[in-house]
Image 1 (cartoon, rainbow, N blue to C red):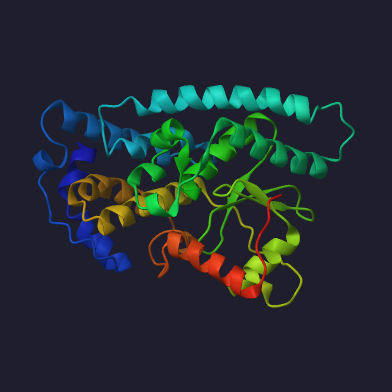
Image 2: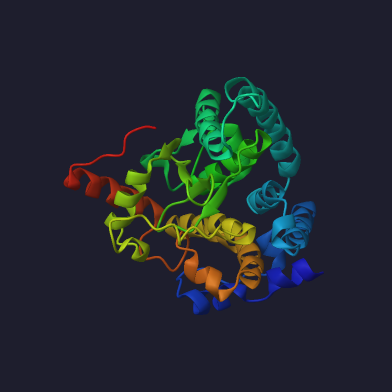
Length: 315
């Protein structure tokens, strides 16, 4: 009943008022949003399950499950949770074995060095599995932000790939966490004094000098001097991580004028907005409220690198 009420209420108008987003979506009745009969019922169950998951304490949220439930707005008939769980289990087992071979526990490595070595091993493993960032030509396809499709097509946006890296890496002892960063999703690993960053979209680790250069190009406040400050590395909460994925989908639907899927996604956005504080919204530069979409930020950054005569090289 609660999920049905969310589909009925004019959440799109409230969303537009809060965040100045023009969606051009007409209000729809519940009977029109999810189709007929069992299709609508499955969507309502998916929304209810999603609400239960993100209502948990943030550290207890099963991020892959929540991402799979989010994808059900597109097709509620698919057993997305089972598909995601099965494929992630296979990848986790594969990386666990790969990490044991390349970075054995018996190797005399300090914890920080071990994390760096595991990050490199994860990049090699993900590349061997065939995963990659989507091309700029296909950037505005909703499938790139839906975890079941990303696992099936082995191609996606930075946010969905970051979730994959984080889950698979953890199985092999690599502790990754998303960090706030302008227009990009990056993953941090290592200790406070020797932290590193991994860029899932291009499948590589960034060096300390690269991150410093990157921040200064984007005029990030923490880089007022030449020394890199890690004060911005507060981890992304799970609910903000999900909201970034949903915001990317909403942007795609708005751009492609897909009012049907935008309306089916709206209750999920409404739920996520209720669980994200205003502080998190301001820090969440990957979704709405940013005048530069993620793709434009990526293109701009590449152009700036060429102008500056410096290009990020592989790890």
